[in-house]
Image (cartoon, rainbow, N blue to C red; front, side, top):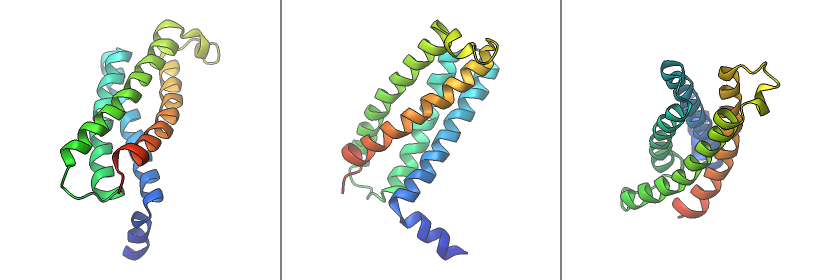
Length: 143
């Protein structure tokens, strides 16, 4: 059992997809829990992004791209800047589709703001995963 798991995580693409999914789940669950506690969609988006960024950096740096400790701080800064761009995209999409124009999604879910927020969260995360992969592979974790 150990060998198939080890083989899976030695494949960079499979490991990236696995931890990308894990990061997405961490972000979504964090965002939904924080939103339920606060009913502040922008606060929930911001805090969930911070949690997701830290989780993603640790897993990408140590497990996926197997980087040496040298220059870790530089990679963290690059990673944070790249994630800042997708964080701003996430905030923009939340503002646009949940705060400003909720009826765009709401027309399909009887204008239920909780459902609007959940749907927008999932759609935004799909775009963010794709953008983050490209930035990580090309800009941050080069060998």
